[in-house]
Every structure is written in C-alpha cells, then in structure tokens.
Image 1: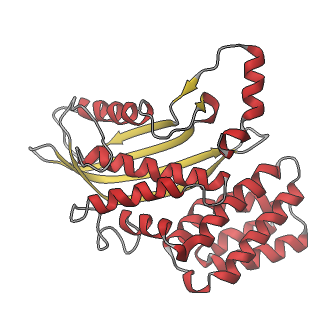
Image 2 (image 1 turned 90 degrees about the vertical axis):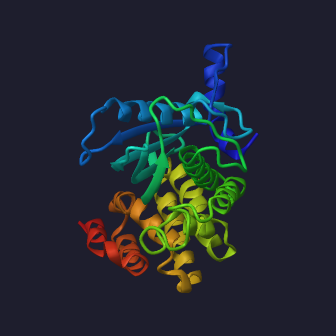
Amino acid sequence: MSLRSTIFLIGSLIAAAISPIQLHAQEIKAQVQVVAPRVQLANKQILTTLEQSIQQFINNRKWTEEKVEVSERLEISLFFEVNSISENNDIVGTVQLQVTRPIFNSTYKSTILQFNDEDVAFNYREFDNLDYQENLNLNDLTTLLAYYVYVSLGWDFDSFSELGGNLYFAKAQTIVNLMTNKPGWNQSDGKGMRNRFYLAENLNSPRFKDFRVLTYEYHRKGLDIFYENPEKGRKIITESLQKLSETNQSNRNSLLQKLFFTTKWPELVEIYKGGTTAEKTIITRLLNDLDPTNSKRYEKIKE
C-alpha cells in the first residue's frame, strides 16, 4: 500500500464499517471545459462532444497500479480554449491545468499545480474514438492528455512521499521524447521555458530535486498537520522555504520555482495571516526574496 493510500486508511475503515462493499474507482476525477469564444462555428456541438470525450478518456482509464477509493481520487481541471479549427479538423489553442489535493483531517483541498500551456495543437473529428498506448503516439490529443495526467500524478505522489512521483515524471519525459519535432513539444515552443519540454526536463533533473522535496515537506509535513496544529505546520513550512532559499541560489528563476509560487501565493498569505508578529516579519522577508513578483501580495500577511 502506498503512503498516499495509507493517508486515507482511516476514512476507508470507517466506510467499511458502514458498508461491507468497497467501491474502487479509477485514480482521476477530471473536470474538463472546452470553449471557443473567438471562433465562428457552424457546429458548436463539437465543443461539447470534445469536452465529454476528454473527460471520459481520463476518468475511465486506469493510469496506475494503485487501488484507489472514490474519496482518494486526484482532482484535475482542464480548461481548453480553442483559437482556431481548420477545415481539416486541426485544432489550435491553449490549455490551463489545475491539480488539487485533499488535506488530511480537513475538508480543505489545496491546489498543488497550475500550469498554462499556450501551444496546443491536435486533430479531432467529432465522435473520434480516443485511445492511448504507452510508447506510441496513436493520437496527438490523447498523448497530450496522457502527458498531463502523468505530470499531475507525479506531483500528487511527490506531495505524499519524498520524490514519490519519479515513475510518473519519467513517463511524462518518455512522451516528450516520443513527440520530438511535433509542435508544442520542443525547447523553443511556448513562452521562454514555460512549455512541456522544460516542465518534464526540470521534473526529472537532479538539479531541481529540492523543489520536489519542498512539495513533500510543504504538503505532507506542513499542511497535513496544519488543522490540528497550525503553529507546528507553519514552522515546518517556514523551515522548508528557508532550506530552499539556502540551497537554490542558482535556480531562482527556474520554471519549477515560478510554478510553485504562482500556485501557492494565495495559500501562503492565508497560512501566515494567523502567525505571530515575528513569524509574519520573517516569512514576508523570505517570500519577497524567493518570489519578488508577488511581493505586494505578501504584504497582506501583515494586515
């Protein structure tokens, strides 16, 4: 049994006491939205069909070897904005990914990843059968979806055990290697380093191990105890951020660091609003150093 499953063991035992039937689910609970606000379409139903097809493809497929209860499913949100559809059914657009994780002993769900992909392209005819096979590109759309599923699973497993997402990040890297020279999969695609190529490269590189360890310490050691002991939770989160500051001077502008703070700044503000005056002073100075882009937002901690 993985650590992720162990976290939810108490809940599973309670459910078993209520009913002898255990319902196992697929690992993902995806919510998908497809819009095309600037595209004139004779058949707007294709957007709804595509939306439903993507959601069913992700939710109905078995992505890991884990036995997952319904309450344990990883929640993923995918927002597709279509910019153009050609006569040959070539679709070009963007996708926004958001991944959330439940926090132990609470009803709170923490957003662990937000990523905007501005270089999405695939071919889709209404009612196409969406299928995927590892190590093959049967369909540009399903390969893209598999990439983001594996990135999401890796991030989630990293948050429950130190470097627990290795297997899934390796699968994402394999997909990048498979899609070399396809639009959207190369170093020069997207905006700067904010693309699928560098996301997979960073997640699999020893250079950025500390960012992945931060994901574990922040969530498993910090947030998972926060609702029972907020003082201890804040202390652990502060220590993990201080460790990052000390060990990653050369990686201050890396993609992973930017993604962490883009995702976490609203949560960090709320976490430290309840701290002592001394804590607020220390963390505000630290966050301004690590994430100067959001420095004005961190001033809310002191309010």
